[in-house]
Length: 110
Length: 114
Image (tube, rainbow over all chains, first blue to last red; front, top):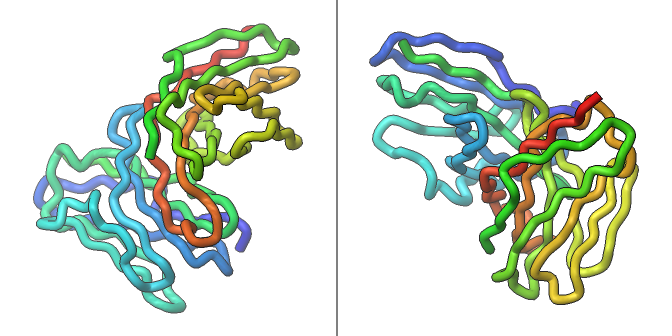
């Protein structure tokens, strides 16, 4: 498709529960990025992939966060044992010539 | 990636040109200037990028100073739909750097006044 599709749009989890977010990149794009936006303006880079290989995971809180991009499947970002501070909008971007962002998943941890 | 400095907010009258400045005094020779915007809480939207020449596309123009230490994004005829947070980002680019992440600052909140 011609847009980055993120699901679900909204996700509510109780503290300690697992959260799983999905991202279908634009067909033909080799690169996928995940960003976390906690406050309205602040983006934090989490992880990037080149095809199914992790390229840069310097932003990932490794204890609870994991991500995958497997062939013929949407990419996924999983948070085990969510904390209140994980409440944020999570954006996925895929990149061909330029990076195109999805509309985000708003995760609320209560 | 080089750090950028932008004013936190600006207003512009509808129909006028909106000029958004960005300082990037530590930019390296192989770093491009990119502009993205985020309308309300949507995903960031690519606007334009350039290396040293001025650039124009259907959305905006980008003016980069000769010393490349600053740039201006110009929206020639601002509409209410241009109200957004605008991010100026510098990063290396090119086919060997396809996987370079974008480092967002705090951006400029542009409000278009009817």
